[in-house]
Length: 221
Length: 221
Image (cartoon, rainbow over all chains, first blue to last red; front, top):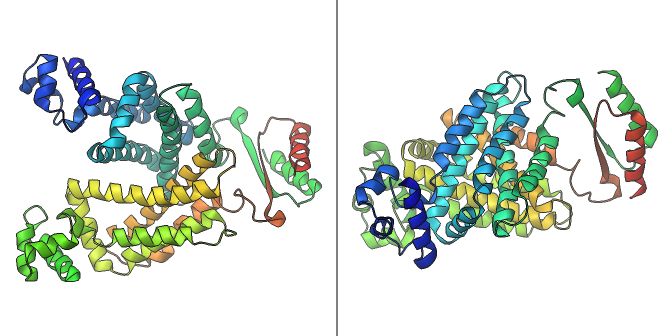
């Protein structure tokens, strides 16, 4: 029933536009009563985002039950992949919804509030993992925002392209950029095999000085 | 007149709550007609954020006219400081508004869309400055999100504390954390002296392989 309502709604949104589709139109096409609609969706806007509540619950549970020895930045990257999967599992629906949110300001605002809730769930997890570190809450908020921004950059390119290509690879690449800025390299390493060294040097520094610094860093391990 | 409407509105919002204050109440207290209110503010929500449109315009102009040789990450940090100044210049009003946005979901959504517009203005500037670089748009989006998150982390701590202490110092510190992750050291070099090489390697990679990669990178310059 829930799925039938979503299918009917999107068929009408695509055919005649979001604004010109009423809840009555949707329930008529789906062959159910108005009360059934409101049992599943508090408003017409909610039928556009039928899977975010479940996904947000999945993410919160994933983070709450995740291995405490794992790198926290890796964990939130994996949490972002849960959201990506929701989109990538259903490309046609995801692209239709993306186009709707571009056109309807109210849906755009709804989407912003959804994204904000994902970001706060990640930040809450990171704040707890970074508790006691200097600037722990600051770092948590910045990392969560970066992960969301990287995820959305890759996701939106994929949606704009009409859902062609591999969204997962694009998101992996984007998240790797965040991980290299904030991840294991600068956080507590999970184990020796994951241990990395980051050297940042001006190009005009003599190579021998870079190598010496590298040796010092490696010797410390 | 505009200022009188804002003052009247906030007096009523604080006294009787946002929801229970009507536009009629506001214009009665301010001693003006309804039409005057709607000349300045499209809706009751807009009177809560009377200065963001101007601030957004200031930020856009600041970025558009900023020195092209300046570090782009420094520029967006300065752009964020323009927003901070708007809050810090009027602590009592800023704290009242902060409390309102915590209590009224509609205002919270409005604020999210305002924050999103600041972030997109910064990202648009960075996308242009990073054009042609690998992952330029990704980097632009991530840096913009980080700057906004760092700014908001410091701003909200200050607002929660009731506007005590120096908001500017707190925001400077937060932005410095972002700058150290994304700033000059890793951004487009302004000239040969700023040119840098970043090497990220697992600790278990043999040193000779790191050195060879470093030589390749240096040879390319």
